[in-house]
Length: 356
Ligand SMILES: *Cc1c(COP(=O)(O)O)cnc(C)c1O
Image (cartoon, rainbow, N blue to C red; front, top):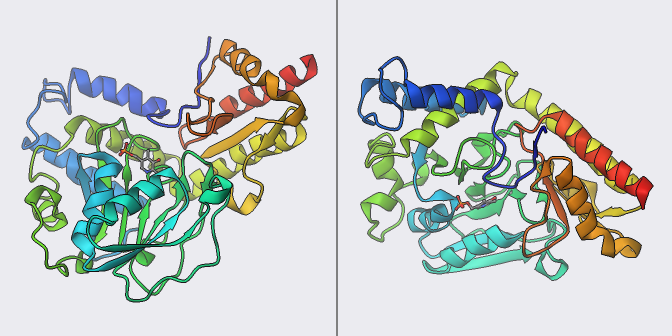
């Protein structure tokens, strides 16, 4: 049976990425060696790294003055690296979910990290809009897509201080005006590659302004100088990321992808609204994520949650259970998820409704 992969992360990758990765495991770039066993200093892997960086810059139209890094430690290590490298005394955070809260918690280790607004009292079901960013803060941190709660800030904010964004779960899902950001980072395992690598897009002139000593492995400048090879980079995950980026370029890049993502999300939100069994957890369409679509059973059908989950699973629809902290359902509709999978889920919802 065809499987429909709605997992939130690690998550669906393009078939192209899987196929090319299998080829690379068998014979990487005609070397006769596997990508799993080749030196990161080999000229073939250095070429792969350079091409992956070049594709990143091309597809996101990253302006001059920015560097792209591939590092270990996931997005979670960036929660600490950002304040360590950018924050002298003060920083500002928008608390829109669990990941945003974790980022804020790490920043508090390095000084006064101000929470400018939070939607926690409403279980993070909206993105706060009214807040003041302290202008004496060294940066303002946002989480553009809240993977767990299903909200997304779909535009690039204009702020007066350097802007930092965790884009783990919506990078490459839409065009981004990188020039508005000082740093964009994320784990690759949502929209790009298997787990094991984080990407960091960093504006070079933001660095070197803090006085604290920074361990080499945590210093962006060290990784810039080493071209992401200060230590052994996550070779395999970077190779897979290169394949995804080639696939994305072939499809027409982030603009074409955004169009597909809007179509998929609209189909599913429309069905959630129409179907009497379900309600969306995010009321305001402006705040609804195009990547993680969250819904629950409506009031009169609460007892059908598990039966629907089982029904969907029996049809090959996998990974739609909500995060363990919120329950309900979450359908992750990342770039690689084909429209036919969304249609399969919608059909399951319709069929289940007619039986209930
Ligand atoms: C998954 C996720 C993280 C955590 O990423 P790790 O690579 O596991 O550290 C952080 N932020 C967001 C928005 C995420 O979706």
